[in-house]
Length: 293
Ligand SMILES: *[C@@H]1O[C@H](CO)[C@@H](O)[C@H](O)[C@H]1NC(C)=O
Ligand SMILES: *[C@@H]1O[C@H](CO)[C@@H](O)[C@H](O)[C@H]1NC(C)=O
Image 1 (tube, rainbow, N blue to C red):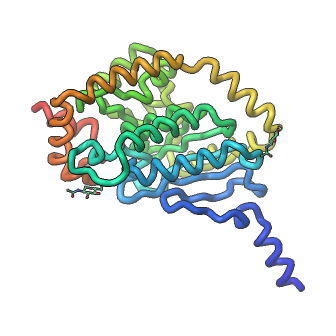
Image 2: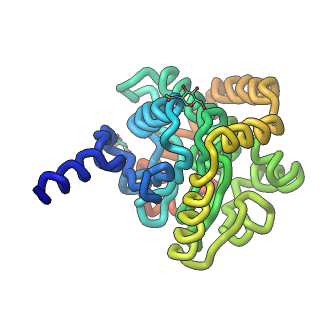
Image 3: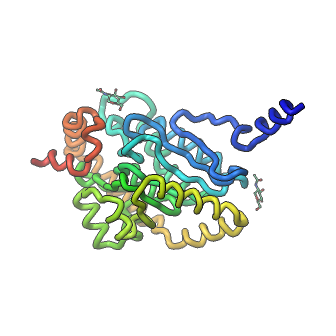
């Protein structure tokens, strides 16, 4: 009899009942009813952002859109030293085979918009490199907390393009002067500096302290009525950059991406970095300067 009840408990427990169909996303419940969950990005060796992760995140975000049981989602990484790095540059090369690049990019921008618009609260727990695409994702979440290994960079200018999905949000968050400094230089920013300028809410000196803070915040938010959580997110979203300014960035990006110099830069980047090797990606913002020296 005990075995039966145990079976029933396990089968009906919210963390076990739903099958988890993802390969690059790892889930864990933060509280007992699983209304606060952690999703760790797991695409070794560096959490490169490619078609697989774009597609899986899209499925996850859409599944969160029409439900009331998950209130808070913490997005972290289980890859040491990396949060989420850049969009895999291979998809921009003529040799790329696989999904249509336009489809991947459409889904990529759809994911960013979903993070800002769907009624779930997203907390970025960053304790590794967040480069390019990684930074664009965390900027679209509701709040950000960093650990000692966190570093941030928007290195797109170094390749001849712009930080299209994050430029407006970063400018709102840290102000135009600081945004200019970081966006124009591709500089790498550590967790203390990020906390000082407001890129993240706060920085913690150990991974354990970061985890403890994020977990307790997620649990606490998940106690409260979902309608109030949603209305607060909606209200804050009224401060978001306008659709027009985001569209303008998209137009600027498309013009730049069509230049032959950009194709050359991507080829050089792939060669110099030995196809985005781990060693090189640890310091992408600083290493990309080599394209010009
Ligand atoms: C979620 O709750 C709202 C009311 O707050 C309700 O209108 C909606 O149908 C619910 N959705 C689901 C999938 O249960
Ligand atoms: C470069 O790395 C990607 C994965 O990161 C892989 O799919 C691709 O085949 C590699 N290309 C070459 C030329 O090694």
